[in-house]
Image 1 (tube, rainbow, N blue to C red):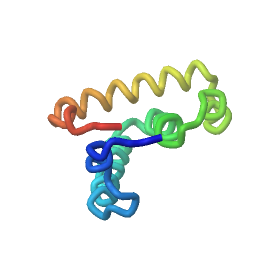
Image 2: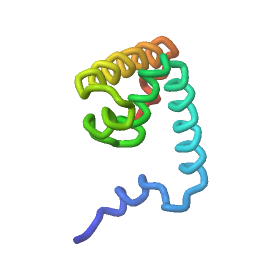
Image 3: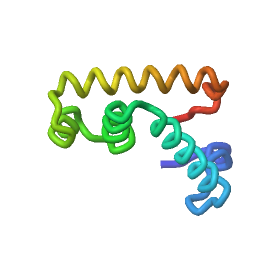
Length: 95
């Protein structure tokens, strides 16, 4: 399989310190926004989105029904989207 040289030029090296710093800043910014959510929404969003867990797993961990977890995640993500948009960061969000 051949990869065009142009595609390689656009990809950061695996040990690219600039990319690592930017990713770290993005992660810290995301965590700061999640921390501003109501506690139950923050917990569910962190587990679902940041932790990559399924609804059933999150429900078991937090002791809530799966439907409640879905509602909390939806409300939390909606609130986060409004905050990101209000802060003018919508174009900066890549993940």
